[in-house]
Amino acid sequence: MRPTYKTDMDINDIRKLLLKKKEELNELYNSGLNKFSFPGYNKGSIRTCEAQVLYSIIQEKKYSSILDIGTGPGFSAVYLARALKDAGINGFVDTINIEDAPKSTFDLFKVSDYINIHKGDSLDIVPKLDNHDLILIDSSHTY
Image 1 (tube, rainbow, N blue to C red):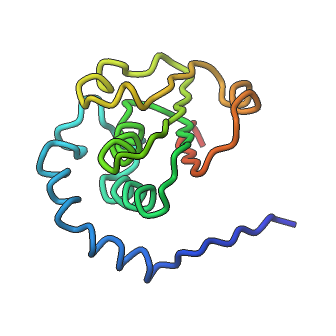
Image 2: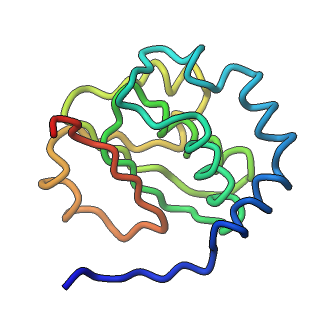
Image 3: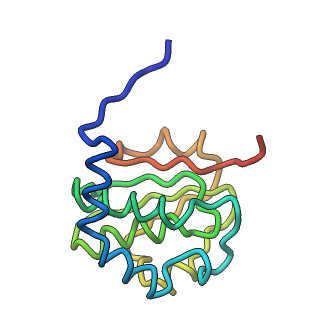
């Protein structure tokens, strides 16, 4: 039997939230926080629109501890950290990657202070971490 999870946001709530934040999200996109101007972005990363949904939810719910499994080029970690930074939320993003994380990218987007980098297999690292408000699993695309 699969576990079920209940959230207090449905698709209509998310649509309203995105409409409310439309101008802010457009500014982020036009400032260069999009897949076209992001160093190392590729097909395995989440899309800009998905990152913007997570950005909005983090700010709406005031999430402060976020786990990003599968750093890749760092696109999602940057967006998650920017959500914290832009909202003035005292929080952090734990990001896990099997290879070295792109610290220079985090520096470029001025979010390094919000990101804790963990190198290794998530199966080994996750049990050592505390609970998180939001978890994004975007790892191993070798299916």
